[in-house]
Image (cartoon, rainbow, N blue to C red; front, side, top):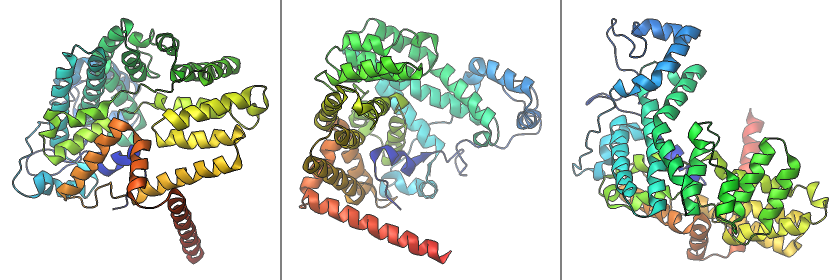
Length: 443
């Protein structure tokens, strides 16, 4: 199995779907065999007629499905969270190896995982710590939304292959998540912890839910006055509305602040709770899949605004070189995402750092990339319990101290210098390029 290079790609290892029923394996979004007289739960029309109408693009049927989805989705049966039993064969993995080989997890395992996440979130919701209550609502909104979307997609064949059906399924997801989203927004309205407010900000994202109208980057910046990150989100909003002057002003303000903290929700910390650790490996895999999927697109927008602010043309603006240098320093010293380290290296060039310093940064970047590819982190066997448990331990530690710190630890444990690892990556790249050229020449 080819191993991915970044933690954010881990989800590719364990895509969702697989098993319905007790003895036969289906795709998780497939429709169960239906009697010819079965009616569609949203329209009361024969399901075969609804399916044909949707595939033909019938506006009336599409609209009816959209409007009735939220009201009726709870009536659809969910996949039962059938316990995954440790039968002494590979901590439960042996029971699902046929679906793992296809890159999928069976729905009953996914259902058990979501049931466990709900229990953990319910405990957090009772916490006296505001940030933990915000995390609970954030997780519940996403898990309930995903479960509703899955139930909806099971009512129509080949929904993933139909653009309109996927869009309607997303609407169902948003509507199912709305009560928890509204509760999170209400918590944020009176929050005293900037991290709680940031959790609501990331959850709202670009959604146009009424509950999200009052959740703004400007409010976060006011609550978190020494943190550069909310100002970068202010810059992102300015760029989205076509106001480059406001965008530049916001990034400049961010460059002068001492802290760079994304305040991103610590969802992966849930992997270390007692309820999760008590589950067998297949269920923990499904839990990690759901938690890893919670990354918000807004997480990446600060990098885009920094790169735009420090573009080759923009750095000719007076004062821009100094501001870009300050941003590079913040990313290098405080951002624990490898992507932030690479962005810092890019803008350090624009900030006219010394060639020697740039070479050092490039070497460390190459060493990190090479280490993430070659380190014994990701599962090497799809039915090896120890391999998965080692991966889970790495994932939990990365959630605790950050990706960059974990990679630096791995570099230190390798017994090789940064320069040597960078050289190995460049050599591996050269070999891949030469092999690609040979393969192309044979075509």
